[in-house]
Length: 400
Ligand SMILES: C[S@@+](CC[C@H](N)C(=O)[O-])C[C@H]1O[C@@H](n2cnc3c(N)ncnc32)[C@H](O)[C@@H]1O
Ligand code: SF4
Image (cartoon, rainbow, N blue to C red):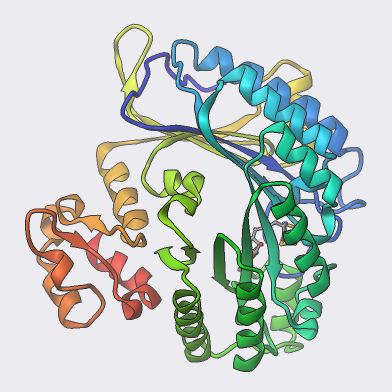
């Protein structure tokens, strides 16, 4: 178990991530640490719950003296709703017992639209979940098929309706730039997503990693990648459609109806708060803090063994599931702050840009990538224009 340190980092929030590494079917584009039945002998959702609770017990010991309750909890995957609602509720109880939950805690689960029922969502809400994020991806059948999705557009509408009835806030994930997806297809998906009146939307440009099934199809010439100019246009069309529907961007790939409906858990990642990540392959982060004996401890990130069987075996043997970790010096922390902060609609305070890079801001304004007005005055910030959002990586390279 990492030397998490007993000292409390009072200025940072604390959150908990739980990685549930199971899916009914692995989508050809997906590179996440997740396993479909048959891909991993002997690792079961039931076994996972016991192992995750055992990791929480270890975390309590490692964080003794740090009494911050979780302000956010995020069940991600994989498909967390491959677990029964009662199993998810037991895990959330584990979080309550280990760290406590802040009274206004945000508790999210990701879900595939065809992995929930009205009853399971009501059970999750009763257990303390506040939010559900559905992997909608598209509303166009041939796009869903290319993405290997098991759901259809009707599943999404039903699931969103049930979530609302249960009193849960609703987010939907969309993917654009799928091979064969036209601009009109994408507009149809945007219209369908907006018609669901979600509180929050994430829209990701499809990334085709070499190690995935889709990566193989690409190498074999079975599919063609979407032209980057078309993908850029898809982003612009999305941002316009969301804005017209009352959804404002707050991170390059995320929009919400009101600031209170932003995903607080993800905002915590992007603003350098602390989190413990439970589960196979999950990455935790605790910023600089004071140890039990009053000694300063550097920021630390660590990650668990990736395979669910190795993870469960470690915990069954009373060992830490940590695979490896790294300490981050002040420079590395500052670098990450720029990398993540620039992508936010709140902007990055110019004072957080490394001093030797601050002279680059004027050039970025001249190129139309950064808002000129926001970059002056006592609260000067680097705030991306829409064009800047499309070229966020290039802006980050200039500033780091
Ligand atoms: C863990 S999944 C969400 C929950 C659920 N497993 C599902 O797919 O419905 C997180 C999201 O990441 C996005 N995603 C996954 N792989 C991606 C890729 N290669 N390119 C772009 N977005 C991706 C999808 O929008 C997906 O909904
Ligand atoms: S996109 Fe979601 S459902 Fe598909 S394999 Fe990845 S985690 Fe599983």
